[in-house]
Amino acid sequence: MKIKELKNIDLLKYIICLILFQYCFVSQLAAEEVQPQAVELKVVVEKTPEEIPEAVIEIVPEEISEATVTPPSPEVIEPKAEELATIPEAVAPIVVAPPAPVLEIKMFSKEQFAHTLNLAGRQRMLSQKMAKEALFVQSNIDIQSNRDQLDKTLKAFKKTLAALKEGDDSLALEECYSKEIKQQLEVVDGLFQKIEPIYLKIVQNNKLTQDELVRISIESVTLLKNMNKAVLMYEKDSQSLSEEGNTKDSSKLNLAGKQRMLAQKISKEILLVYLSIDIEKNQKSLNASKDLFSDTLFGFQKGSKDLDLTPLTDENHLKQINTIQMVWDFFLPTIENISIMGKGGITRFEMTYVDVFNMPLLKESNKLVGMIEQTLVKH
Image (cartoon, rainbow, N blue to C red; front, top):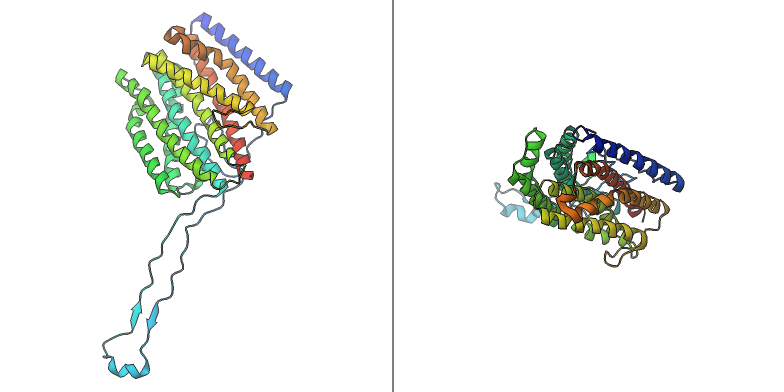
């Protein structure tokens, strides 16, 4: 990580912070023997961005072929022998053409729904991650790394969005079965094309104007809300395939995926406050994002009526929740200070702290998504 912008005292604090985190994180993992269940890949999914392990299902989804219609053989009407004399020589037998086959796309299986819901949910996270990376570069923090990651994030979002609509074997995604969902994905595509040129300026080593920073503040939220609408449509349809008592699993997968998004949205909102973009609005949004992440984390442990969330019971899931809680506990004091103090609570040291801790929070949250996806497939 590039830390040359830090003053000597900030550098010392930064190093102490990392050592403390590494010691406590590793020690507690060893004490609790937290060994998150690995997601074994049989489907190769492009890892973009490369630090984020893609959560894919353990078994290859069943191939869904287009509904086939066997057309009837052409019916040839032959005249009877006694009628031949009345038929002019030039008139050929009448051929009745078969009806045109009607092709339909079948609804997904449980396995395909689980995988599609995961990757559709990941799009919400990527919508916030690309904004965060652009703002880090604009803030002169870890410039080259964030610029490279922004390029990868944009490509991952575009490829996954196209795959959700038309299918992509490399991502193990089938063509979208629903006209309504596909229309919503087209709305998302239009919003992304509108904001993409701003992000490409950062990739091409250009600085953004104040107006462009305001656009990121506004349009990244619009993109997120519309992608979330598509996710909820997938979730509703997936519940129709679940047995009674198992309908909560798709909701848990959605909420676990939303935690990935919040890990990036929180960082984005801190950066917007740091850059003096809609400070009051983004400070308020930061506080709401922080509370939602905490409430959902608690809901996975104890349940939540407000979120309609039952507690996780799988031992490996609970161990992973403890790991996420540990990272969150290190990150939370800085977030709370900024959410209360606003820009006055942000120094260069706090910004480096955000740069350090937002990705571990994302990675550990992503592991939980993979575990819940496997559970959804097995039920």
